[in-house]
Length: 426
Image 1 (cartoon, rainbow, N blue to C red):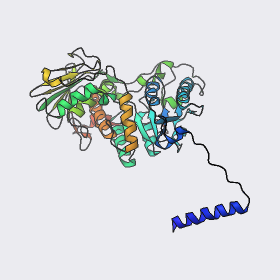
Image 2 (cartoon, rainbow, N blue to C red):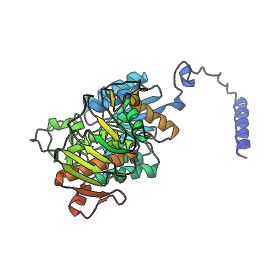
Image 3 (cartoon, helix red, strand yellow):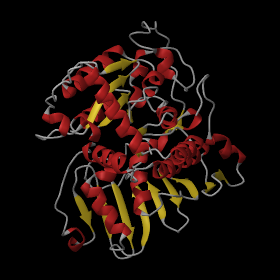
Image 4 (spheres, rainbow, N blue to C red):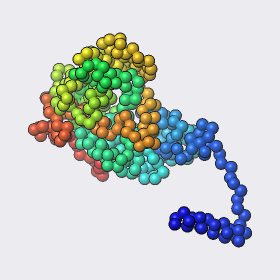
C-alpha cells in the first residue's frame, strides 16, 4: 500500500508538472566527494562531532580527531574566547569552510540534533557532568580523564551510558598503544603463569583540597566565563592560575588529587591485565610510601612512585608465578625472559591519542564496545578514589564492589560523593 501510494504520488506530480508547463531541471552534476570517491568520505559515512573544552589537552585530542577523514567538526565550546576561536580555525581548515560554530555554554552545543558525538576535554570538575548531559542528549562521548571526581560519579557515569546505549571512550589512550597492549596480553593469556601482583605508578599520594587562591578581578564573561568554568565545582574566586583546567579539581573535595592523575592510566591498565574491568580491589592500605590493594581474586595491586626501570612515564609491571613484564611510555619492554618479548616489534613512544580516537570512531559506526568503555572507566576510577580515601584517612579501608560501599566504615562512606554547586546535577 505504501509503495503504491508513493508511485501514484510521483506520477501525479509528474502529470501535474507537465500540465502546468513546468520545465523539469536536467540532472545535476554531483561532486565526487559527495559520493565518497577520490579518497573522500561520503556524507552518509561521516561522524558529525562537537568539541567541549579545547584548551591544552583538548586542542591536542581535537587535532587527532581532525586527522581522521570520516569526521566533520561543526561546533566547538570553551569558556575562553581565544580557545574557541583557535579551535574553530582548526576545524574550518579541515572542513574547507567557515561553518564551525562557537559556543560558551555546552548546553547550546548539546542541543544540536545534527551532532553525533562529542569530545569532552574540559577541566576534570566538568567531565562526569558534561558526559552525562551528552549521553542524555543522545551523543556518543570521548571523555578525557580523570573522568570522575568520586565513587558516586563513577557509578552514575556507567549507569547513564548503560541506560542510553551511547558509546563512551575514556581518554586512557594507553589501552590502544602496542607496548601496553602486548604486556597486558602476556598477563591475560597466562604467559606469565598465574598472575599474583600488578604494579601501577600513581603519580602522587597527597589527597586534599584543590586550593583557594587570592581573588583577582574577573574578565568579561565573553572572554572568560568564570561561573561556567566552575560549573558543578565548589565556588572560589577568580584567579587566572586556575584556568589551566587540566589541573583543576582533579579528584574532588576532601580527597582531591592523590593517585588519580597517573592512576587513572596505570591503575586502569592493571585492572585490564587482571580482567577486572567489572570490579575493583576490596582492600586498600597505605604501607610506607606505597598503597597496597587486594582484588577479590587474590591478586595484589601495588601503587608506588619509586623502583621502576627507566622506561619513561606511566610505567606498569605485571608479575606471575613464572615471569614478569614491565613497560612504560618510552615503548620499551622488559621481561623476565627474552622469549616473552621476542615477538614484539611495533614501538610507538610517547602516548599519542590517535589510535584511541580511531577505536572510538570505529565503535561509533559499528556500535561496538570501545577499549575504555564507561564500565571499565567506572571501576578503574573507583580503585583510585578508594585508594585516595585510604590515603586521606591514613588507614586501611575495605570496599565491597557489589554494594559499592566501604564495609562498616561510616567515615569512609561519607567520602564517596560530594555536593554539587547549583544548579548542576548528574
